[in-house]
Image (tube, rainbow, N blue to C red; front, side):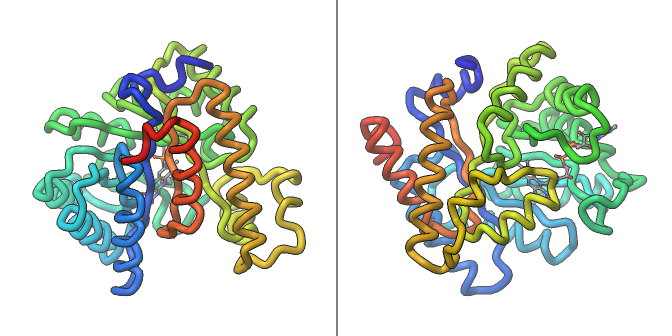
Length: 298
Ligand SMILES: Cc1cc2nc3c(=O)[nH]c(=O)nc-3n(C[C@H](O)[C@H](O)[C@H](O)COP(=O)(O)OP(=O)(O)OC[C@H]3O[C@@H](n4cnc5c(N)ncnc54)[C@H](O)[C@@H]3O)c2cc1C
């Protein structure tokens, strides 16, 4: 699997990226600023800000990117979805991001406004799917485009051929990298990469790592988005209160084991789902920095 992340490896070290979501209030906004500041010493390839479907959520994404652009010189990526917006409305949001210097995007189709699992219908005057929006962004000067990938298959894909074909259309439209949904079984990731390579796609596939802040929440979230949580992972947290140091220690150890194995399999980049908290991701980055001889530390 050594060709998994050839582009990222070209940069010399392990490429680390981090995802945050828009805050709902001022206190949460301050928390994101703190997370960004505590990640900066690890030389992030980028910090990405997720994008919500509704109008107010959308504005919070724009405001968060604006805030981080003011406060940090870490490269930023803005997520975008095609959901429930005309091309014209979405182009205005894209112009906002661009006015803060952002030309790196993570481009998604998104979920139906009726909720995850409800049938997706494109907006009649909107971008029809991810590939359509990727094509538009590339044609208008985007420097780097990430798209999603699903080691356990997207729930809307009736079979693997459909799933890999969707990725192929995104790559053909100009995607530069794929970032995976979180997973805990590295064999699933490896099988997925093999499927993608067998389809003739050489795009870097960056594993999405979810350090577990609360095993119960992760179990529920995973069920909603079609990811599995193996029994061997669940049992590590048996009897542990999510607010305790023991839960935190179990989470760090689990993520270290997963990452160590991914690195042994030739992975050269990692994308962390931070959930706007630095309590797990910073110890993991410190551990990685010591492991990589400081290449990811300032
Ligand atoms: C790294 C990452 C970041 C994310 N960030 C966000 C975010 O910021 N905001 C948010 O709301 N959600 C986000 N999501 C969740 C994502 O929006 C959902 O998983 C959504 O259900 C699918 O969006 P997608 O871009 O992955 O879809 P795609 O990969 O484009 O498509 C998903 C599936 O839909 C079907 N499909 C799509 N287009 C077609 C077509 N033209 N014809 C036939 N079938 C088609 C296929 O089965 C395909 O596999 C993220 C997911 C990941 C992995």
